[in-house]
Length: 330
Image (cartoon, rainbow, N blue to C red; front, top):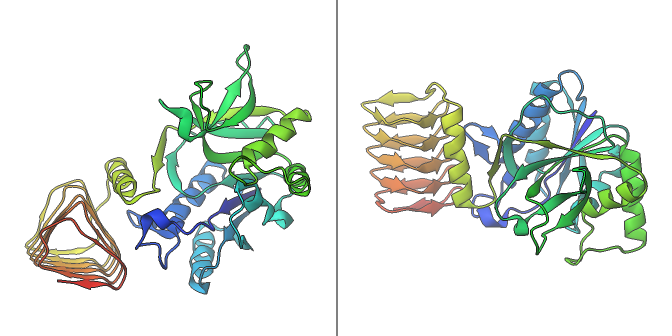
């Protein structure tokens, strides 16, 4: 079984932290989003996942190295495909067409989720959903009068379903999906947004006799904007209490917090809801409700609702800030 993970997007809403680092490689409490996703499926499907295929954009070599390392730790193979131009979710999968064979999971790496292990893979397509109050911003699953899942609607203008698609799909026969997407591209069957959409491909499969079922997640956590990433980090922090692995001197900790390995903190107050990634250094400061990325340095600052990028340097601030990688302020 393969995991196919499209992650070619530029993550513009998370800039400046995604100028160099793809959004799915941003850490949440020490583990990148994509590592959390791959780990979830290797744990839920023990000994069944053999390979993860990452669909990338024009990213530096270091990105592939990081993804290979993640897969090596989890005991599976890492493979790669490239999406040069963003033409929709179905197009993204088609860029990995050589891997669309047999059983596959397609997982979009821009959200985090918690899911129970009791799902069944009996249908041709299984779509993971989450109930939402306002479905107009999502694709949704629609059901017939008997309650059977029978199709998809993208961003409905009327309330026909609250079951939002969250970007996780199981496909029993990847080759069947590949042929459907090829047909769509041959016919230039674009959506109203001018893209080749994966729910449209699944609809075609259903029209040709494929069966559809749904599964649910217990939590669906948005990471698409900086405020959402901070909110998600706070939720994960409460769920995953962990021991502090940094070096603390004359420092007050107000939990919950995360302090990664090698972090050095002196004469400071940390928390609540502060995530301090590996190798960061904080001196004579108060840091709360913020994310401090790896190897950043903060001196004499009071920061809240802030983001300090990798290897950034901040001194003397007492206001919310958003500092990119390798930047220096103060």
